Amino acid sequence: MQFGSLYGPAHELRVGAWIDADGAPMEKPLQLADLGDGYKIIYCFQHWCPGCHSRGFPTLRYLSDNLKDKGFGFAAIQTVFEGSEVNTFDKLRINQEQYSLKIPFGHDVPAEGERHPSFMEDYVSGGTPWFTVIDPQGNVVYADFRIDPERFMKALGSDDMEFETA
Image (cartoon, rainbow, N blue to C red; front, side, top):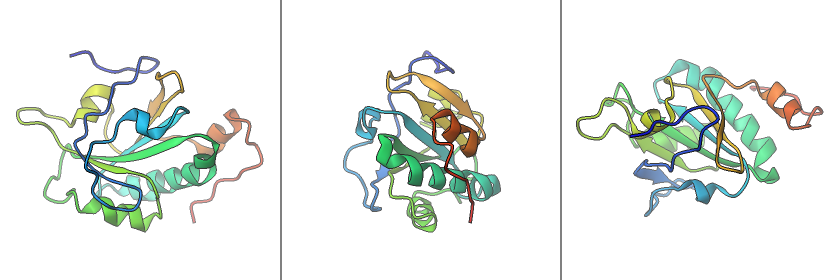
């Protein structure tokens, strides 16, 4: 298996369980193409992760609110690498509603005999919260625990936007 890396080609998503932007279970797994032709931001979380709630979700909401109408595609994936009894599929809708995120949410658990969920394996992510940005050419251009929304917006030429977590 070839692992993903920064500045390398993005792997197709192998997450099997999804809810759509309205919270309904999806019949087919989400594919990268479903997120459009522009930049894609994928946010990995676990329901029980304090940093996911204090920093990650507010950042995701800000980015989604400001970029979804500019050709950006968004998805959130619960990468269950621990706490499978707490980080369950039903928590997807809870988090989607809590942060008013009208984006697809996936539930990624390790395959039988595997240690980590597919996204963590394919994208070599380090845990949660985790942001991965894929450019329109299909390359991973950013992957880390945090993304500074103000710097990100400035890099996009949107200096007039300010970040608020409230």
